[in-house]
Length: 192
Image (cartoon, rainbow, N blue to C red; front, side, top):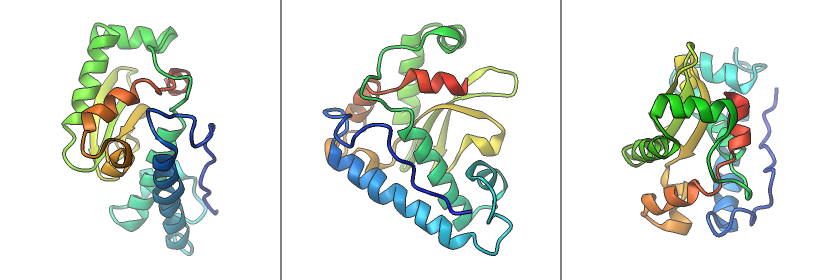
């Protein structure tokens, strides 16, 4: 199975001024594309050759196949939960679950932002659902992915510097402020 770089559901300039077309060109068009290309070179002749990306992430041992597969998955998940019409707060069952688990959307947003800010070095901040249906915040380093812990990702924020350095330099906090304006809560709710 050949894995493909997913098309963005918006134009490269659609997330501006929060994320620039230049950031998306490098982040999606080069970083994400490189993980896809690397994965396609690594899996022929392995037990992972015909598996969907989620299964590779769950089954591959630590090393190059896992790293590239998880980065393909993580980036795809991230990009497909952004929207030029995003922002605000989730409604419906996801909104109610956030309210129940965190007390308020504002408290959730604060704690998610803290998780992202406190992720040391390169990594990801996640909102996940566990097997019992409860919501949790997770921080993963490098290519770490909640799928390996049997959790269902709901939302993620990429805090590798390449996700924001063109637009925000080293100001991760400014990037996170912008992130909340482009979160696609409808897509996030589909995973819940």
